[in-house]
Length: 371
Image 1: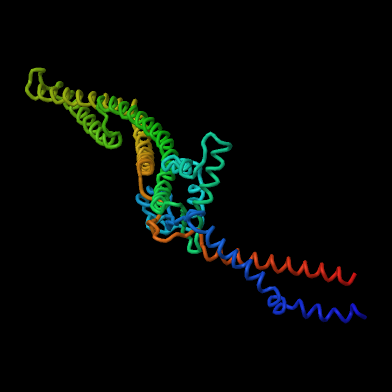
Image 2: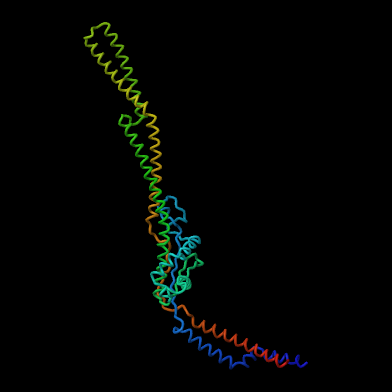
């Protein structure tokens, strides 16, 4: 009965207001000391303040400048002025986290020395990467833009690092694309030279045929056949006329001499046209086939040249791969540490620990009294 009667008194004694009032002096002393200590130890003498600089940009929508500039039919996603989407933002984040950019920034700003890392100590590069990742953050915003946050004890250095990373992003992606474009350009350039050689061989062959007198097979065949038919008819007429005149007149007669001259002229014309028609017969089919092949080769050459010019644009382009919204500037106010938060957390934690310790101590004493 004694124990049951004492339980309500114990509960009343351990209620929160009563508990705080009972132990107010120790709690105030401990919390006060914690407050003073946290204010002192969160100061610049113990924790170096850090300043944050930020760059915000949107990725571009297109990866190929030649398609955006030279293609006639360009979709909205290939527009050179269009903003990129999630896929392009993720690509840029991957490049920002690359070792190439980390090493370039670490070397330029001597981050190992700046972060106080001994290069001859244990795992210096691992520690450098840890410090880099702790102080430099990359993230994607809810608006599909990309954010670069740099924290450093030197506010100007933080801004310079953020802006340099932004610039390195462009040069790194350009270098990656240019390496691929240059290799593709070499392949297309080889095809272009081979195609030019093949066209030159066909043009030389056609030139040889043209020197023989055949320029245009279809037109020449039409004209020469008509001329041959006329000359052959004239020759036969003159031959028949000469045959009749020689029956009645002497060979020295003027009419006979003139007719014989016209006959020989027509005969010579027929022989000349027969030689030309023989050339047509010998080289006509080859000339037509060669001309058609040459036309196709020139069309293919035009297509390869277009590809070559596009790849050349991609290999030589130096356009940025982002639309910068905000450049990094020197911060005027520190971002770390947040002293009021440190003080609040420190005092709260100490207060809770003290309360728990006192409760455990009282419970232990009550158990000893009732035992």
